[in-house]
Amino acid sequence: MKDQFDKKKISEMDFFEYKSSGYAFIKREHTNDSQDTLDVFNVYGSDGTLLAGFENEDTALAAIIQSGLEPTSLH
Image (cartoon, rainbow, N blue to C red; front, side, top):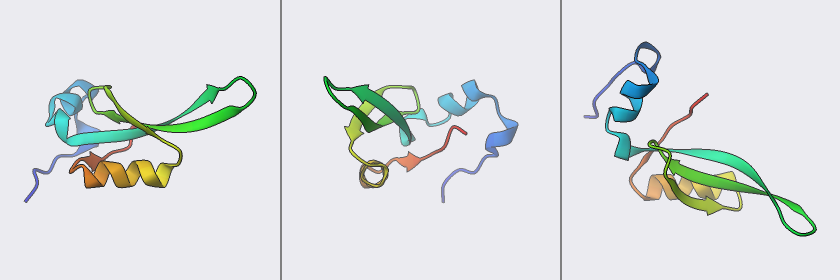
């Protein structure tokens, strides 16, 4: 059974220190190509390390799960 904690009752620093390598989040970012603006869905580790970039959010989420990480939201 996974450890349980209430994300609303702990500080951001405590959250990042709590098994930080087991969580990942997706951040939608815009890139400016020479002619187009493209959306990239970057996957970051909970410590802020960029892990990978994907063309859509579904693929990014699938990669997090397949890697054995737990997706989390920062909102």
